Image (cartoon, rainbow, N blue to C red; front, top):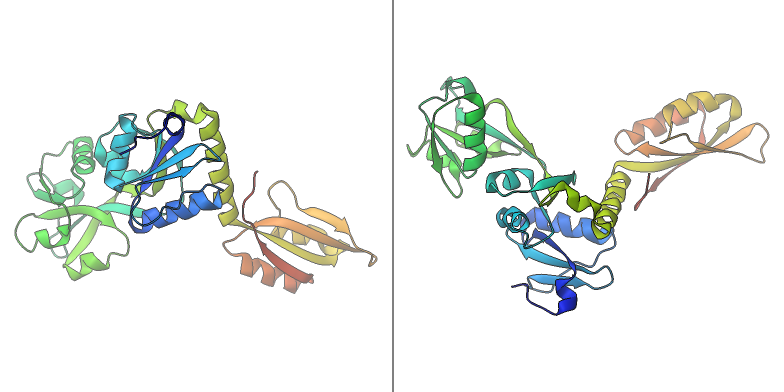
Length: 292
């Protein structure tokens, strides 16, 4: 699948999901970071010759396997899928999308808890995740592997309990189930390599720094405003910035202009508070990328 010229074989090879929301968000993240990874139709490979990177589109479940055996240098997949694969991989960084929680779930009125799983049948598409958790708990239970639609397995008598990724929980409710106990695993999209030492490669280091810049930019915004100098201490308590805000004098006597990176979450309340304090000309600006 990945045959090509000697030039292409020397490229950094990165596996990304071939479909679904993980694929869409991974491609968007990489494009925002300046890489060309858009494919045409159903092509399995996209070349970015400028950065000497070859993007390979694979099933999300298979990506950790290809990374683990060295076929590709890096991969973007779910933390849950990487763990369930059993492949030898190292998580280099979390990517901030595709978040989900992995739970056990049982019939609503059953009274089953994670401490009473012994001897029960657990249906799941993530057998290794479940087996590792049962081993950690010292519990012996039967694990029934299903490829999908595990929620119906209890109603059909195939299992007593399920273990699955839960996002909204609506599907569980419709099946008459509820989550039990704390999450077995908190998952999100992650960048994985065979070993942590991969981060020392210059091309990988540049990739990670660019991605980190995009993730920070998505978390922060820039606030700019003018206000009387005697209110500066109160205002900068609201907008402390990363190190400190930028403060510049205005031609209007005893007034200053302030610019600060601010957490995107809650920024509208911050703008309200600044207005109430006496700030004028409050401007909110998006950040496309940054380096801290």
